[in-house]
Image (cartoon, rainbow, N blue to C red; front, side, top):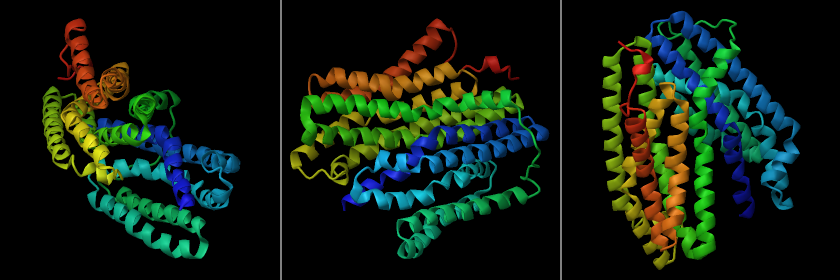
Length: 402
């Protein structure tokens, strides 16, 4: 049982090490959408070609690191001699995962953005069903290495389905040997804020859990707070669906040089953020009594305390959604510092800071402080933009739209 628990770290480890690169590669699709809005087919082909080259280079680079440092990386997450050999066998297959995953990440977003829903959902089906079937067959014959190999094969099959989307006359883009380092760096800079989300989440977890462990212990304190932190992250990840629409709509409006289209995109995004946030508030309130059990909290008093903390935290779901769409708007209107500051304040600095401050009063105070953080971050950004910069919160005049 212990070995399975330790080996679970490998998908998490791979995801964490590739996270920043994958976010940056996905950002390149946004530039294709902007070029499409402008009707610039040549630019679309150049960005597409440059992205495919970057996918190959990044995939080879990460795979080389994994191959050259396989023993060290395995010991880093599974140093226990009892699980080392099994973990090593699994990683021997999974170290080649980036070779395929870089291309799949790009085409996953590209196909979805450009309307290839059939290929998109078939790819998801393959990733789930075929992967499960192959994991059983290859795992029975080859052990953990077979399970890792099943992940790669199913990902490769899903990638081949998405590639068929490029063969269509309407959506296919010509590949040309094109690489512009300055342009690539500018686009990579666009992907930095969303990549930083990983860092901000870790800061929140470390700060709040460390404080809770020191002041309230692990059995009750950390167990209760962990439920709130997980729901915080759950809301944050769900809000990505709205921001994905926003990214496409904003970039398309910029490409069209259309203020009318931009106003429509902002309006739809804000309404969706408020609606989804309100729905999540209701969902958290209704599920507050059962969620602690889902996180393996058996003690009745700890479960009751976690449910109370969830009810205190629930209203901030609206502000998490609003903070995200505001930050994404600044990201794609070329105000990266504002995006980083708003993400940092709403996800890490203020939830952790207020959580620790009000946590001095009670354990429930931690939930109250974490709930206050995103709302305070949004209020600070509004004050800065409106009072100091004399702008609207969603001001796009610098984009010179007509």
